[in-house]
Length: 220
Image 1: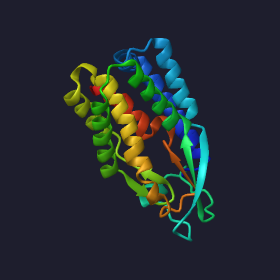
Image 2: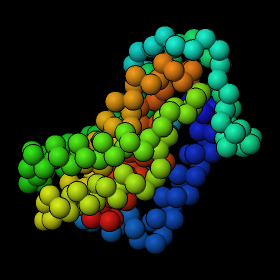
Image 3: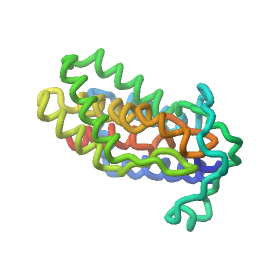
Image 4: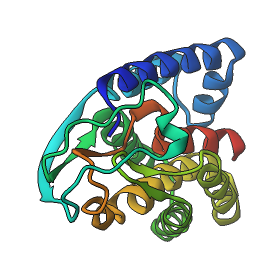
């Protein structure tokens, strides 16, 4: 798990990212497709952004490695990457902004839109399979994945399954699919990472969960 300085940097980047989206109108376009008012959309964004700073510990696992891992070369060159002390155990936590808020909003969309159960299951399953295939464990850090592959898969499968409800289905399939495929299914890999903390939902706003849901809606 990245150190506190990195989390602060990610928070600042996320804030700049959201300001940029607001300025060019992408926020309005995306959430208008989901039937949200501007006020509700910005409230959701703020909950996601602020929630990205909060990790709720769930339980701990004994790691399979006994010595702290080294950072991958591509990360070690950046001064703000630093491994936290490793004690032989990994705390499993859930990130509020990267997991709780997107999952809750997905449930809201399921309740308030005429989405079929089979379509939801199929969309989530497809994105989960894609997310699992393209994600990879990063020793000492957690699970990483490319940014755009999962949202492309979510938008495509939603358009094929239900063109009339492709925007909400893309969000639900994208967010829940990444949570399942890249985070929950890969919990078995956490023991091998030597990370002191593994957070479901990762770094919140810039984690694959939020990016996938947001970009999938834009593409759908």
